[in-house]
Length: 240
Picture 1 (tube, rainbow, N blue to C red):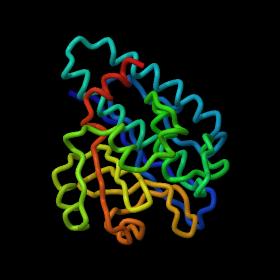
Picture 2 (cartoon, rainbow, N blue to C red):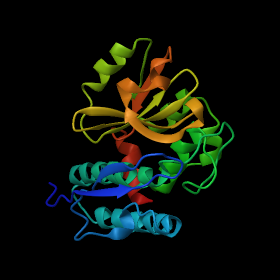
Picture 3 (cartoon, one colour):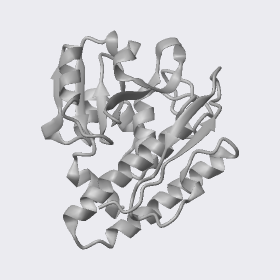
């Protein structure tokens, strides 16, 4: 279904970080005919590039809306959604500091709390929501609002959570609620990553191997749901 895949490596220095991070980035969708630099993280003039990215998202969705085959449109829409969110939107936010009351809408400028990181990035990728009111709700309410209800479940054991994730496909986007925290889970190349605004040491937005996350290991409750399996949400996203 996908006729072209673009992979490349981009090395950038995260603000507030001591070491350089090498990120493998890519946008995979047949709606992109050629490389478009406005979709990608650029540490130079990142604010304007981020605004351009949000504008380009609308154009990419418009291209997919022209498809007549609903199942094909939905499959391509899910891939586009995941790639834009994970490979572009998130990369702008890495290094943004955490604060309990943080609600900045500008990456790396100010602080952002965990719930606001969820709602702000989803709003920026084009999901229609109130980023303030939803971010202030419990993680269970955020998950119920955004995820396919048939995928939502709770665990009190980390091993059971890992077993649940073994059935998740590569490139799917999920939301994971902990005791007092919330973040995204993404599977890439068979590995599960936790992407969140980390409250520990006020570190802020990071991407880490799920099993290595101190926030996850210190939680007693795990509630998770799948965003990309929410067909209604994805189809509405394409229309917006």
